[in-house]
Amino acid sequence: MGRALGGAPRARDCRGGLIRLPTHTCGVLVRLQRIWSFDSRNFRSMLLLSLGPKAWPRLSQFKPRILPRSREGEFLHAWSRNLSGQNQPRGPGLRTRLLITTLFGAGLGGAWMAAKAEKEQRQRQQRTEALRQAAVGQGDFSLLDHQGQPRCKADFRGQWVLIYFGFTHCPDICPDELEKLVQVVKQLEAEPYLPMVQPVFITVDPARDDVAAMARYVKDFHPRLLGLTGSTEQVAQVSRSYRVYYSAGPKDEDQDYIVDHSIAIYLLNPDGLFTDYYNRSRSAEQIADSVRRHMAAFHSILS
Amino acid sequence: MSPRDPPISVTVRFHGGPSMKERWVCWGAFDLYWQCLDEHVEDTGWCGQLRSLFEVSCPQQWIKYFDKRRDYLKFKERFEAGQFQPSKSTENS
Image 1 (cartoon, rainbow over the protein chains, first blue to last red):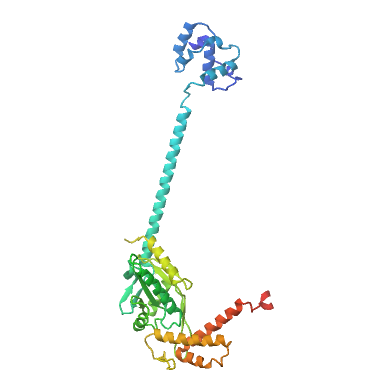
Image 2 (cartoon, helix red, strand yellow):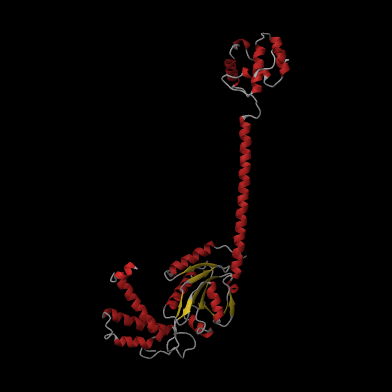
């Protein structure tokens, strides 16, 4: 019926107006203009009913006499002004679109964070697994203690261990360092809520430092100081594990010699993992502080 | 054991190095000798007695070791006091 009023709306009827509209909307507005140009209420209401979109009931409030019929641009401008306060549904509204976008973005963000958390979890598991393997396999040794009993690294699991590598014929450095190590152990022993620390002395001179020599040596320092010795190969193996350098010097006419060696005190945690090392410049108090800090931060990976 | 008694020779000791007591004796003798050298400005004649005491108190290897240690410390003092100038030949190398 709308076509009876004047044929199909032409696209160029809407061009040049103050607002550019899509062709369909434009066509609707042009039709409306032609409706209002017939000053007949009955005819108008019949057309409104026949054309049918949801917006038509609101249009019945519109007063046709105000409309300037000659200039379509002004018509469109007035039209849009009157409609600005009303919710004209042209597909989904702005609020709905914003809501959908936000939900979509939140969904993407959530998925990304979940994937990231899963990746971190997998990395942590891999690291723990690598540490577990290192705890069991790396730094293992099989030596004799100063009472002749065989010892390996697993025997010390569950204890904090401070290891010093030296030899009994050492002029001054080894006694000084062992004295320092014993001071650290005594300071930590004095605190009852701290776990016990096991001091260990491993010889780098197995040719001369047999079990009896070790027994005689360690008793001068601390009752719990454990001396470890073994064959040349066993000592070489444990020194390699802990990256300890040692080299026997030239022998004099007494067949005496001094072994040059790296000087460090090594800390192992209760899982048997190498945790820290302390060189000659660290005092007993500094070492004890460091051990206390490691103890406080320790979480077992083997239990 | 008085300082004038010779210590047990390390060659017959099969069970480790000097004991704690023997170490302290050696270190004491060495400290006395060093002190004497510092007071008398390296006059080894004056400190000869302390030197022989030092030599009987410590194993041979330790004597050499402590002598080298003392030389090194003296050198370090002189170096840090700036008494060593780089020679011309090393500057261009």
